[in-house]
Image (cartoon, rainbow, N blue to C red):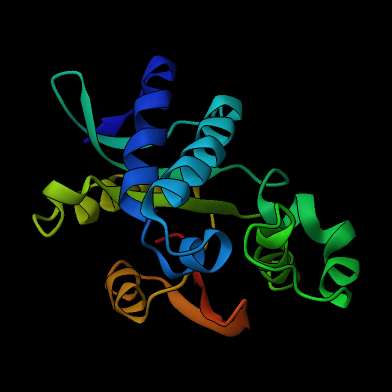
Length: 194
């Protein structure tokens, strides 16, 4: 478990995409075809990781990134980017599956619930499917949380699975609110530094 090097960011994007292609938000945005979801989530995460300069945390074995806990600095998260367009996006009819504007509905909902104060937005968090359930995700998140604590930073995230609420709660995150978008619940969680 360690901070990833910049040249490892593409591998981290791939691990995150494979881990999250079946997430309820991915299914709601991109539909039932797994390869379509994988292509869209991979493209999204490659773009995200290419712009990140803050340390991203990962579980690395040799040259393989097995798990990742991404983090975006204050002012650069989906809330900051989508806030100016959130209300307008949500006022329009919901785009059908296959419409490239469909994910914006989810992001606009997240933006409306984003933490108003400076925070470090966590995500994507994921572990390669064949390595899940072995404590890798917890270890990567513990490394990231230790960094946040050491710098006195507030952590913020959203999750679309109730079981993840329990996972993040065990790491010190607390649910602040819940909202639905595209028929999918999102729990918004905050963690103050320890």
